[in-house]
Amino acid sequence: MDRDTVNAIHSLYRNGEMDAGELLGRLWCGPDTRPDLDGLAVADGNRMRLDAVLIRFIKATEYQLAGIPRPDFVFGYPLSQPPRQPGEPRPAFVAMPYGPSWFHPISQLVVTTADRHGFCAKVSKDLATPGCITEQIWQGIRCADVVVADITGSNPNVFYELGLAHALGKEVILLAQGIDAPPFDVSTARLLRYELSDLPAFEAQLARAFGSVSARYAYEGAQPEF
Image 1: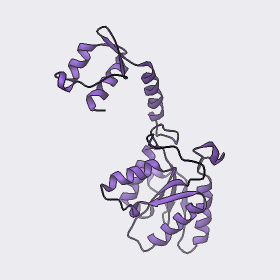
Image 2: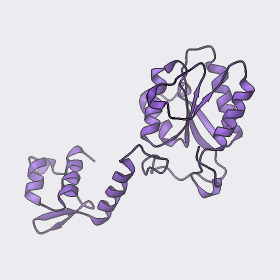
Image 3: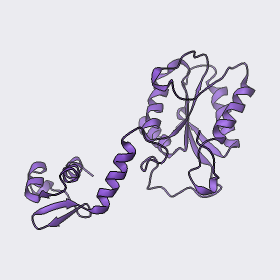
Image 4: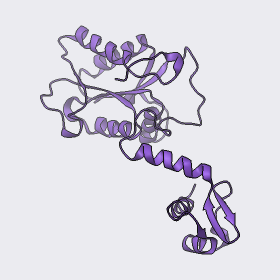
């Protein structure tokens, strides 16, 4: 919907009911730009109000967005896509700095560990579809059940992707090597510290983390939240 329609919904939600001429006069200059409010607003003579179902939906969404969204955020996943079927791998998104020599072995370890625990992990670097990279990253994160973010070196691209994950209420597995004190904004998050000299121990940590990602559907079992 366009911004004028959003403004009309906002005005009606806050005021409860408004004169149609006043509402439309504020937002649109003429009949050519007046949007279709069918299904959104109810007209009662010259008065307009929001549909009761829409009001309840707005209240529920506002409640979810009053703080940082959680995994049950209604728009955390694309509602246009069909629900995942039993047996299908759970999508995961991996955000890592690309340049370091350790990128390939660590990313491969994350992907293979994810696969063994029922996840199909996509690394942001490996997105090959032509188009806008930020749009592809957004779609990859939005579809994911969990986001793995390696904040080693405080890479700005990783933190950008981590911010998108938090905005969508995604569960995050946070990784780092050689960090004494993580940045303040993520200092309270559980951090899996690893060393390149001990990858088996890191793999065991990853396995526990993937195994603790909360279930989205009942058939995925009653798992605790990570």
